[in-house]
Amino acid sequence: MIPKIGEKQKRGWFPTLVVIISIRLVINANISFRGASKALEIIFSQFEVLKHVRIPSYKSISRWLIRVGLYKLNLPKEQADDWACIIDNSIKVGTQKCLVILGARLSQLKLKALTFADVEVLHIAIHEDSDQRFICQALEKAQSKVGKFLMVCADDGPDLRGGISLFCEKYATKRVYDAIHKIGTFLKGILENDSAWQAVTQAAAEAKKKMQQTSAAHLMPPNQRSKCRFLNVDILVNWIVDAMSILTGPESPDKELLKKYCGWLLDYPELIERLKQMDLISKVVRQHMRDYGLSSETGRHIERLLDDAMKSASFNEHACQYAGMIIDFYNEHSKIVPANEVWIGSTEIIESLFGKFKGLEGEQHKSGFTPLVLAMAALTGKSEPSIVSEALLKIKTKDVEAWTKAEIGKTCLSKRRLALGSWRKKKRNKKKGTEKTSEEDGREQAGIFIQNAAGY
Image 1 (cartoon, rainbow, N blue to C red):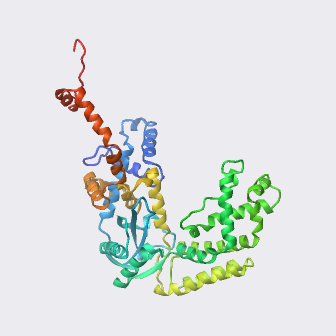
Image 2 (cartoon, rainbow, N blue to C red):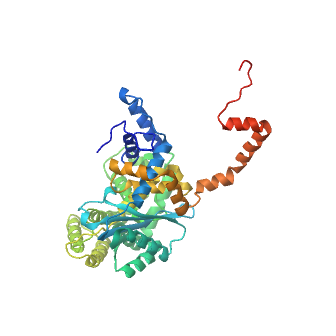
Image 3 (cartoon, rainbow, N blue to C red):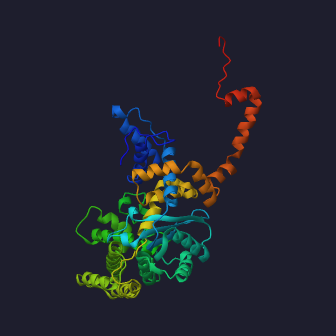
């Protein structure tokens, strides 16, 4: 039921529909908080019937989203024994990380890539040290909200490994490895000590520095991550393939320019062919796990898919070895799934959630975590008008402040203001004390403007 434009929220200043539109502009249209406020102002000004409607500020929209997030986080979940959870840590910001646990009912999932609407945030924790006891306790808190976790999907990072193993052993829960991180582990084992690969990545990094402020800037290699590099090999491989098509193909207006900076690519034909083939294998497996999840037949499905892909090209020994590692792993790993069931086999959805949250925070994400982490809960699950209305009715700003104090403590921004801005406050107070009497200061605080003009 969509409310009318004039219907106001109880104890609210703005119509419920304005609140809903504002939140959806941020969530669904990827518009910033300031952009959403300005967009409403532009649209409403074009219609006579809407010109009288108040436009919320960007701060109001941000607070609404956070309150909706806290409401969804605290909302009682269905109790069942077929819940799946996805767990991961964000990147480190300062000394802290953000641990997020997502949940979904396996019986309600369809054979397709997961979306934010398919999952719910069960737990958020800001922490500095995530030992195995902390991770296990976080999983226990999340499980207490839903009944029973049938499976836990995560990467095999050392910050999560011990805690997940402890939880799975304690509650007889199955552990599923994320497909992308597992592929990255195999690639790391093959390429990490390969001299040709090391030479190509180093040459690409040097070429980028030389090209970025020249007429060849549009041809330069992509950025290479210092962390999780082998999870993003495809980005560099795609550039190499495109660059080689210019260097070895028919005449191109950029051929000589590219050859000047990246002619070294021609020295590694065997490595480049191997990378192309391994990238094709990775894409086939990633897409299958994203769309169809993990089942008891996954190993056989992947083997058949890779056989079909390899028939179209003469795959070299290294690519065949890589394909064999993946097939062997999934033939063994798929045995944990009961027949006729499909489990989640990828943590891409939680990585996307972290990316969305980073976009909402903008430059602020470099300065530490804020109450905006609750926006991740608002982004997931259902977002009907009734949920938004109920959230703003039941969750107040003081509830968000209490959650922030309990879960985050003092934010980096508040510490910065206290440490670097306190002298300004002292200076202002001192200035007020010397220039105004106590009576004048009291009148100004009451909103009375004093004018020393004749005739008044």
